[in-house]
Image (cartoon, rainbow, N blue to C red):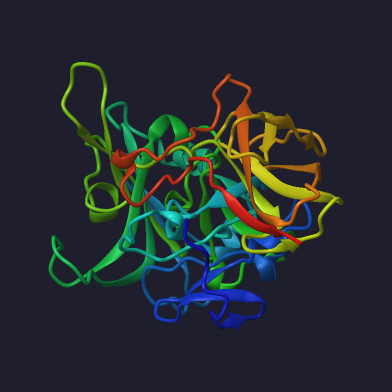
Amino acid sequence: MKSADKQNDLLNGLIVREQEPLNLEMPFSTLSGFTTPNESFYVRCHFPIPEIAAADWRLKVEGEVEAPFELGYDDLLQMEARTVPATLECAGNNRIFLEQKVKGVQWELGAVGNASWTGVPLSALLARAKVKPGAIEVILEGADEGEIANPPRPAGKIRFARSIPLSKAQDDVLLAYEMNGEKLSATHGFPVRAIVPGWYAMASIKWLGRIIATSKPFAGYYQSIDYSYWERTSGELPTLRPLAEQQLKAEIARPENGAAVPASATVKVHGAAWGGAAEIAKVEISADDGRTWSAAQLLGEPVKDAWRLWEYDWRTPATPGPQTLMARATDSRGHTQSPARNADHGTYMISHVLPIRVEVR
């Protein structure tokens, strides 16, 4: 297991993973509550952040609809709003822990956060546009654009876009303009971003500009070439699938990797667990390389599509030396976090149990 480079520069308390485009990680050891403050929330960009004035912003709803239309920022603010909590996680979170270094932003534990999002349900706009019976997906396109660096790639600039099934779009997707009660910042998608609860955050398009209903599966760059994985089912060949629902996982925030802890003492192990639409039913801790597990205490009440905080009182051994802590989650569907990495997931969905090394002194 690799540890993060502690010499990385900090920007407003966030770890700078890339400057251009801007990618910032929350030091996960600072996890302190159910809601991640806006200034602590990780930032993921694929291209330069677009400069958009609210007065100039227009959102187009088009494609396989009977009544295409567009609206402005003030128009959206006049519509009936909803506020929902949702945990967003970059699909490449934990990438630095992979045994062999792979391409992509080298996130450690903190490309994840939980916020309260306010906006208009996407279903309201789709109802107004009158989606045609043949539509099966909805494409969300942002205003951020640039050229892809490495082949295979399309020529010239492209915009970041992803699709979601029509059923998901009509269910719980939100077009958010506020985050934790504050107007979205440019880094988090001002004027409007999509929030796709329970899915990896590549689907929660920032700087939203177009909503396109389509009767064909979308195969754009960030739907097929990137943000995809291999799926195997019995008797079938490996098939490339677009990333979607978050995978079940628990992460240890404190003690952090490489920390020193006192011998013969009670140390509070603290963290969070999440996993798509299912509730977290149990978190367990092991201090002996996974041979035995003990239940942690779940904090607060379960909240749909949001993480669950937990803690565990660990009695450290009397003998100094290295120790390994691990956390694993079980959800309300009876699924338990995998102990091993699934190689077919490539550089994404890193959801196996991660060991945290500490030194008892």
